[in-house]
Amino acid sequence: MPKSITELENHVAQTRRDIVRMVHGVQSGHPGGSLGCAEFFTVLYQNVLRHNPTDFQMDGKDEDIFILSNGHISPVYYSALAHSGYFPVSELGSFRKLDTRLQGHPTTHEGLPGVRVASGSLGQGLSVAAGVAQAKKLDKDNKLVYVLMGDGELQEGQIWEAIMYAAHKKVDNLIATVDVNGRQIDGDTKDIMGFVELRSKFEAFGWNVISMNGNDLNDVEETLSKAGVLSGNGKPICILMETEMGNGIDFMMGSHKWHGIAPNDEQLESALAQNPSTIGDY
Image 1: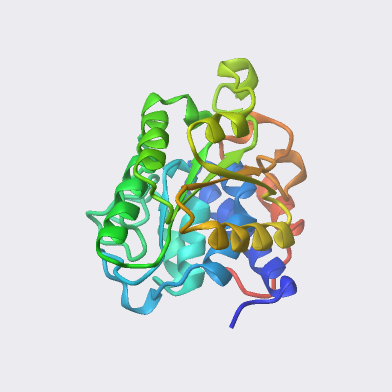
Image 2: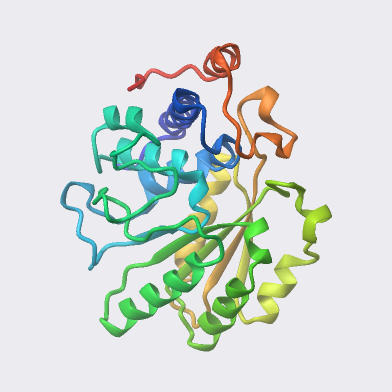
């Protein structure tokens, strides 16, 4: 059963708690982008994906597949997977520790259920997703392939090769979301290598493009549903998702500085106080 907005809000709060606790626990990781994408992951994994967490298979046959390209935001990914039933929530406490399955960037050799592609070397996820989606079409598998990228990641040339390829091959079961938070590790994207008219660029390459507020649960749910309806119409779909890095934690919002640093003890307590949840911590 799809979860109500109230239930989703509670999941988002718990996801934020998981993120800051994971990163704080090892004083390492990437909380900013993870927090900005909490609503997206919550809606995607709780209400949208047609998947089977209790019987994970690498081939993903007859299931929707999600690929995380900007793998450094693994905390939000791991939280979504755990709360969907892929592995015990208690395992979140092993984040970034030696000889565990929850490494800083998702990998496959540890055999973590839910993870089909190692990621974190930026710029590669869209190419993989396009190939997976094309394979589904060849196999007459009508399920969809979703991929998430960061806007700073679009500075990688391989992304644009994949954009061109997916449109040329009419990979119309591919839904690519770009997290447009305007920030990356070294500063604002507009100052590092700014993009103008992302919508026009994707449209010029032959994609259907829709926009959404990635920090509004209603808009996320409605837009992901719309993207599903647009699939199968001869063009891949791009969602330009505007988010706020560090969303939901007041002292992390509005700056790129929390891209890859961990909160101290006092900051952790403040973050947790801002995000009460009834789900329960690991």
